[in-house]
Amino acid sequence: MYYPMYVDPTYILIIIGVLLSLAASTKVKSTFGRYSQVRSLSGLTGAQTAERILRQAGIYDVGIARVSGDLTDHYDPSSKTLRLSDSVYGSTSVAAVSVAAHECGHAIQHQNNYVPLKIRGALVPIANFGAGISWPLIVIGILMGGSSLLINIGIWMFVAVVAFHLVTLPVEFNASSRALKIMESSGILHGDENRYAKEVLGAAALTYVAGAASMILQLLRLLILTGAFRGNDDER
Image 1 (cartoon, helix red, strand yellow):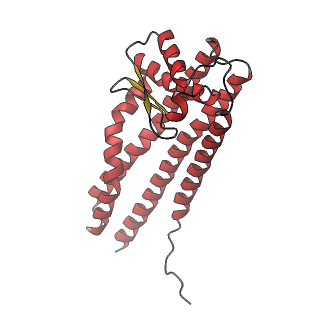
Image 2 (cartoon, one colour):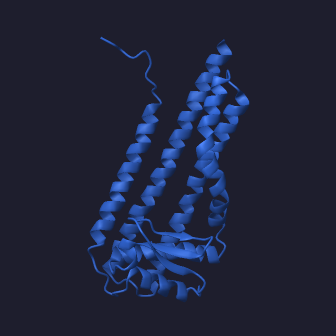
Image 3 (cartoon, helix red, strand yellow):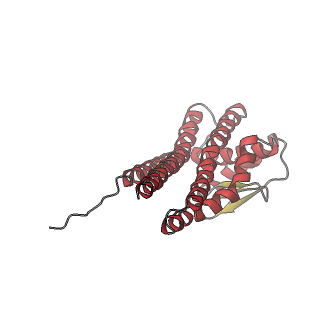
């Protein structure tokens, strides 16, 4: 019978991260699905909700466009465009209204020069580059006999990715907080609808928490693996 000579125990960190992400994704899809069946009393569509909130905030230079896909809603600060998915743009459900209001929260952050949003924007190119180059640098460093310089650069590149995910948390939480306050104060949602909206946006927030946790676990695994390699290299 064949037994593997070595099983990497750090894989458990990857598995935990994957499970967290799957659980969060399942939660947001089920919650959005449930409240996408509940029509808001105001009768506003996601697009109409976004237009009303932006106008109330004194924002007239942000466009509203439809984007294909499921839960692909986002605010693009470079073009000042609020992009709403097919399931949000023309829907009058509580879920659609909530998501549209959340994206408006980002537009308001942009208008108010919200510092975490500016930091996240500055980290985007660094994080994208780091995500693609970190592991190759580390592997090359190891293959070159343990080049500490390349390994350290790779680790710091991955740290930039983790930093992006961490700074995303206050940005998303703040956008949801703004959305909930605006929807309640302006009468876009009424009574129990505000509680439903909180559930929708709370479930969405879990995906960002899970994403950040997954990145931290990957960084921890990276530090363990490179630390173990360096330890073995020092012994030689």
